[in-house]
Image 1 (tube, rainbow, N blue to C red):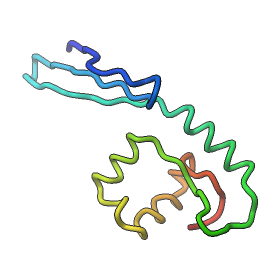
Image 2 (cartoon, rainbow, N blue to C red; image 1 turned 60 degrees about the vertical axis):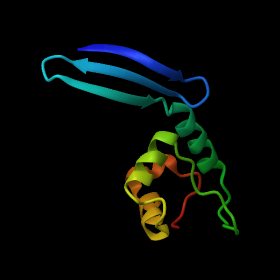
Image 3 (cartoon, rainbow, N blue to C red; image 1 turned 135 degrees about the horizontal axis):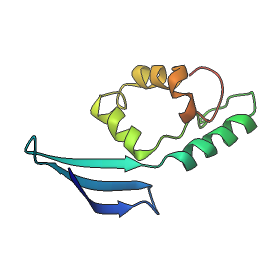
Image 4 (tube, rainbow, N blue to C red; image 1 turned 45 degrees about the vertical axis):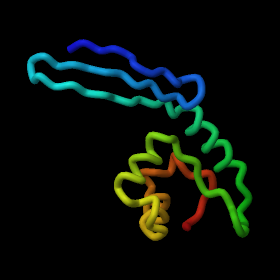
Length: 102
């Protein structure tokens, strides 16, 4: 399988887009990858420094673009209850910047 980078926005968003062609399957694949290490580390720092009290318009999380677009595709972003459930899920804790429940 050959791989060719067709867009590299890693300096700004961390996203690299590549093109793969699998001759055995006669299949073309466009793949986007994002290094989310910086976002996750910043979220951890904010989470650990967050005060216990919540206020109006409190930031509760920060998600990478690749996750944002996946949540949009699934219809979660436009559904407040589904988004709160997703953010409260322990599997998604890396994207939270505050403890507690939404």
